[in-house]
Length: 106
Length: 121
Image (cartoon, rainbow over all chains, first blue to last red):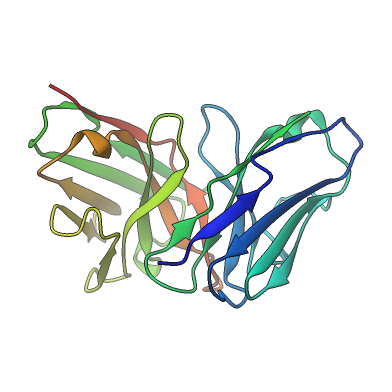
């Protein structure tokens, strides 16, 4: 099973600051990595797929990068509404797995 | 507008069974793989199972294989999760998710609101 390790566990920043979230895979997942945002009481929302492609309707301040085992989700200029838990997820191998999440506080 | 609506959750005793349903609308259901993803209270996300377009291929996480069965009805635009031999650690919100984008790229691009399953005596 591919284990995804996200860091930091919690990120506390002010609006307007840049947020950098990390996801490290226990083995190569090529570019088959996605990022999701989940706010309290809501279902997750797809932000990024294939490591760097923004999903439909996602603001340009969200960007993804990386390949193989190291990936980054960047929120260019944090807004109050970006407070949420962010999960990475790999589709390179079965079972599909998620990281443990990074909580972003604003 | 794509919509996924789960139902069938509830309180069940350990060892019991439950069948979850997910009704889909707003897209050509038979053209998409579908998944179930769960989230235990206060915990992260865990993929549970998925099924291919015509229902001929199923995949499961090890912790549910042999106890859960995913199926679909492309006439009723629905996907199901039959759960048996339920354990306390199956307690979670269960989400139905579309398994890939229209262009085939693999990511959970639409999610339902989830249905809560509680396994307790």
